[in-house]
Amino acid sequence: MSLTLTLLSSFATAVCAQTARPIPLAQTPPMGWNSWNHFAQRVTDADVRAAADAMVANGMRDAGYTYVNIDDSWEGTRDADGVLHSNNKFPDMKALADYVHSKGLKLGIYSSPGARTCAKYEGSLGHEAQDAKTYAEWGIDFLKYDLCSYGDVLRKEGHGNVAAAFPLQKQAYRKMHDALAATGRPIVYSLCQYGMNSVWEWGPEVGGNVWRTTGDIKDTYERMSLIGFSQAGLARYAGPGHWNDPDMLEVGNGGMNGDEYRTHMSLWAMLAAPLLAGNDLSKMTAETLAILENRDAIAIDQDPLGIQGDRLSAVGPLEIWSKPLSDGSKAVALFNRGELETPMTLAMRDVSLETAVKLHDVWADTDITVLNGAYTAVVPKHGVVFLRIRNNSYSDMQ
Ligand code: GLA
Image (cartoon, rainbow, N blue to C red; front, side, top):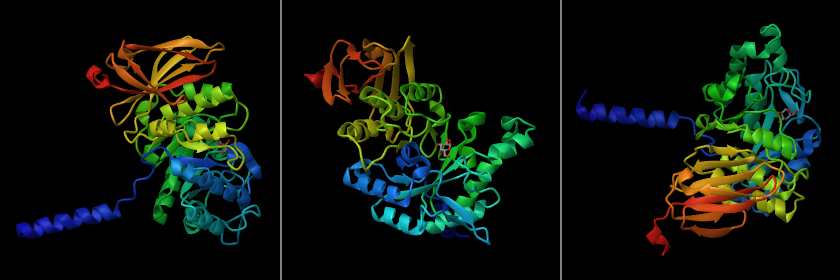
């Protein structure tokens, strides 16, 4: 073959390889809304449409919230051919997907590798390819695949020990990934098996874009903080296309105060966690919306470098976490897990920064110049001071 032909043919292969390559998904942590934390099994088609409408009207869509995810309880029965239909709360899933898409948003759905979902609805066991095809035909863009009753299969296989049947669990998650991929539709794949068998070590291998690292969140400071702060050490498993998921947001559901919800949002942003709001978007206070829409918190979560933040220090209940950002700045969060408001001091050298820096306080929305190498702020009980720090030379600040 002549040199020209060889070059042409390798060019063609590259192009073909490129066109055949699947579209990269979840390059930043997925953002959107999920029905479970507020509506649980009561969710209806009308609630999902109302959530989509609210996301457009209140600016959430424009702030980056994209996925409108229906959690458990949409499932009806299978017909004679095994095709799963939605139940009467969701009269026409395709029409719902069209509606959500017409708003510039994407629609997510939920299933289980087991015969039954956690709320005892129809799961996908034995119907994986068929269900994936149904989702693609409806226009689904995101699937949360929740272990639930597949635990029974694993328990049997592992002679009573679910964790011991690890290879089978991996196979089940891989199977649905392959079924989704075979449809040709880009569908974000979210694993939900509560962090068993250190899922962060093998989530990408089975095609997961996100994986739950913990059991379920609750709308209490105790549960949210237990889950969130337990994520220390998992940073190296996250990155573009594959994220740790400490569960959905509870911001605005009423069980925590403003300081606690700001801690929740700050911690999730530091963790590069999916930001899936879990409140009733059609009824929310200005404070809730301001937390969910804070541009700096979102930018920190969505930073394209995709490095998850981690704990720098913990002295009693006072924790400092940091996250490197793509423009060379750093996000630093001073968390007070204690019961009394307390001053906390950040030494710039502890975050490898020069003595002279510019800080932006994310929640106060103020800029601060630090010239002496340390910054002290009073942090409320269960609260946070959330900073974005730019490393400016002293002369820039004159
Ligand atoms: C499990 C999941 C929750 C939710 C419910 C639905 O508990 O962890 O996030 O999806 O099932 O039944």
